[in-house]
Image 1 (spheres, one colour):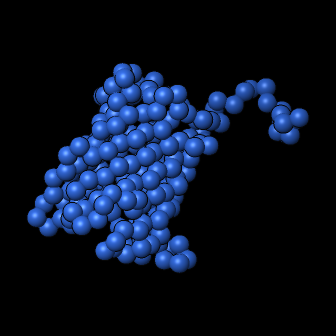
Image 2 (cartoon, rainbow, N blue to C red; image 1 turned 120 degrees about the vertical axis):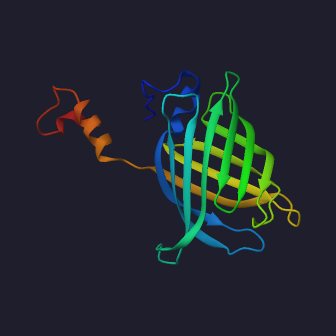
Length: 191
């Protein structure tokens, strides 16, 4: 279920499906770096202004699904205009700053973006651009990222399947929203 907070800036309503905390796992594979499974936690939040704040942390997983070490951290800001054009400013822990542009698909919660500008610190790995696709599929958030370097053409390098994280506050809010006339045994409700 997609909830639209009453204090969400009106321009951000098309992006409301992203709001909240997400967690899951995916695959990382790019020439010159370690191929691995990774865990990910993502949060999209808002403070009433015309952007969503984005924070993502990933970490390498071992064969048993245990955290081994950090992989990548990103922080950014997402905006959308009346024509469903999306812009993202993002900074990564590896010394890369990006500006992404793209659009939200018509009549479905899917976003395609591509880098428009990339700035790197002297210590950053080689990176010259990327593409990403985000989609809300059966209440899950899925994404795939592509990247390129001066040595490697644009190709997929990361993808993940994330589930919405339910907080105790969510459960309390949902419980308060249950109808007062719900049967005591709960079973009759489903008949």
